[in-house]
Amino acid sequence: MNAGEIIDTFREDVVDVALPYLWSRNEAWRYLNDAYRMFVRLTGGIQDFTSAATEVEIVAGDPIGALDPSILRILSAQKRSDNGGIQLVNYTDLGKTVGTDYGRPYSLLLDSRTGDVHSGVIGMERNKIRWINVPAADDTVDLIIRRLPLNTLVNDTDELTDVDEEHHLALLHWMEYRAYMKQDSDAFDKMKSDACKALFEGYCRFATSEIERYKHKARSVAYGGI
Image (cartoon, rainbow, N blue to C red):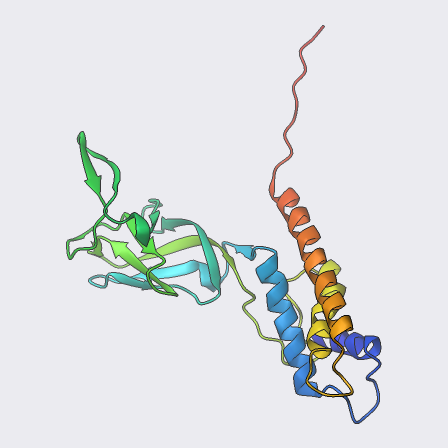
């Protein structure tokens, strides 16, 4: 289903097919985009290693890298120049012993030393990563991430590229939850709103377990001869 088809189905479900609409066009589109993003958030994000959101530029002399705002979680990071892995460190682990250097323990510190980037500190500020060391040369880091949708739905023909079609009808539950919360005497229905919210959240739990099963490779079992 494209965006326009979902909007039409929403209006059929809430019996709002005749002008003037009880829920305006802008409201219906706002509900759809909110449902689109909320489904992704509640199912753990879209796993991605190919979009532009997975690329981070290392700029010589600049200790800060810019992360795409769609990123919810970084799973791994690797420099493109030499395929060297980047250790991802939470800011709460700064100063802790993280390894040994020729038998001596060492810690990750935020200082001005210039050199090869081997680590990145996340969690200090949204959409930013702090390199360790300060980069001596330009490079690109390729990430594997979980992220929010990259597109906002604005036209009837827009495709929900980040949510598979088998989940599209479930988005209606969140749209209807939002619709029945509208502060309007003809629209507001707390009981219906609560029921739709529960249906959506329950579906997201089911979808999450299904997505997790698909991620894991089936293991073959070897049997010995008799």
